[in-house]
Length: 394
Ligand SMILES: *Cc1c(COP(=O)(O)O)cnc(C)c1O
Picture 1 (cartoon, protein in one colour):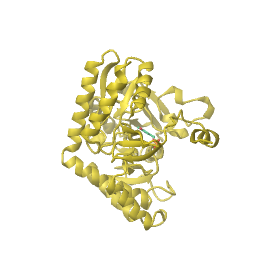
Picture 2 (cartoon, protein in one colour):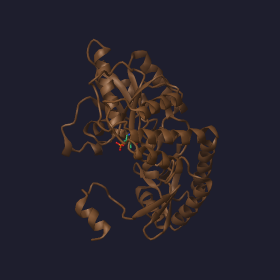
Picture 3 (tube, rainbow, N blue to C red):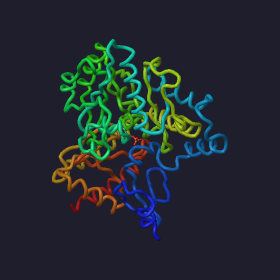
Picture 4 (cartoon, helix red, strand yellow):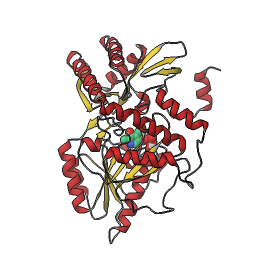
């Protein structure tokens, strides 16, 4: 039995998988079992934030693994407390954190905080949460319901929890607020929905409006967080102060971790929420190493120069290949090329892989670029050489 057959026989088939077998990674290069190299512009969907085989991260994980991997949240966990402080310091917000294992779980935590907040702060309990069309918030029953894409609300998994509604635009959010609304949940740059950023000004106005009425602003930074958009958080870039922020993807550099942070530190009390694995020694020690690496890179100006470099490359592609792409979209190292149609999107992705380049899809027609934050200019150059080769025949 080969690997593909083994996967198909024993792993539940929930993904439309590619069967290239990667066996080695160095920086933003991946190698398959035949020794062929690929440039990685996907970083495991924005997760491998410091690239593959990063020495500092690997040694932090190995040292921690040789000692304690896990005890439980019934004991204090030193790297967890340190990571919480580090995230708070980098964010500039006076918040407290709860650690989970994924983005969906972080969002579940955010929804729980919002619902309890809605109970203790209003005479009549408020529980409704407004989200945006084309959003993505996770795959649990509740976060799927929070996701503003009808195709995710398949009747297979019904009934779904009540209290979620979806609006086309920020303007429509104002109209949708009623006296049961407790929160608005948004991604500042919609990732899965098509790498679509919201306008800074309209977000700032929304934030101010919600604050005035005591309605919570929850920002899902599972994809935008941890320097993805150029600042530590997209909320920093947009210069807003949300009530609740969720993180996951890039935080552990590939070790599963999620976090929900809030300035309403008093809402959850003992027994309200928990996780067996969340915030254990291994994942929080990985998070600390990732943040040390990326903070240094940020301070040196390297992250800003990488994203300008990537942006220039994408702009020149749009100029040259107007037959394939309408425009360049996104922020920082969260970028996309809006393809003219869905079939171009698909063939760009598959042709890229044939040329040794991994790119992602987003929404219905966007080719998505989510490289590691540590990607080098040489790796970007090599990636685009392959990208041009891939698309010039289309
Ligand atoms: C990926 C993603 C999630 C879900 O994260 P998981 O770790 O897969 O549960 C939630 N929100 C956003 C914005 C994401 O990009």
